[in-house]
Image 1 (cartoon, rainbow, N blue to C red):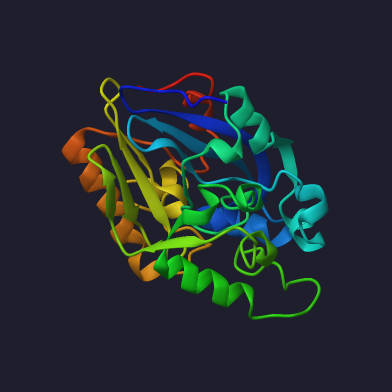
Image 2: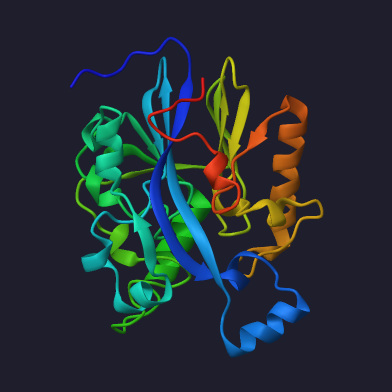
Length: 280
């Protein structure tokens, strides 16, 4: 299939569905909620999406790969039980709807290696993008170490959000390790936003008409995390730098009058434009 040629950078969101998580992981609970949570953990709906950018020189760029297209068979039992999927779309189908396949992605960037952001990495084995998967060095070190700590059946594939077989030892997959902030082009930048994980990475996209868009991944789950004041989530590997990453996002958006796209905000998500509609 011939690649779509664009003269200006544009992007769209590929909706992959929604799963349930625990509210305490995403936002600090109020005293009343903490009391309620002791009896029955409060459920928090989590939308899941990837970002597809079409760039005049870089081609088709994919930011994250979402939940494994075959998660029902590939997730360990404890993951299926803790994070039940309520609505689901396969990444391969979403790409096909915009005329692409995994083999036609030119550049693949993973914000971090958690199961809901890197689950379909195996779909890119042996592809152009799969041979050069962009990830932060801090994320690679942390994810490979944490996911290999244990060797019992229930937890060996998941620890701290990591599912080992989703990114470890895949044939035809190699990582391009970057350090810190990197400009891929004048209108496309990667931002190191540690906190949620040590190597969480955001994406900054500049378009002609919409302006600047920032996808901070799980550095900013939702509007309550962002504030102000910023609110710490429960699932946070580096709480000491979480607030610094939030303020880094705020400074950039203030400077460029940009728009923040939260990673998992069920209230904001319906207002985001999704494929086949584009921001340009």
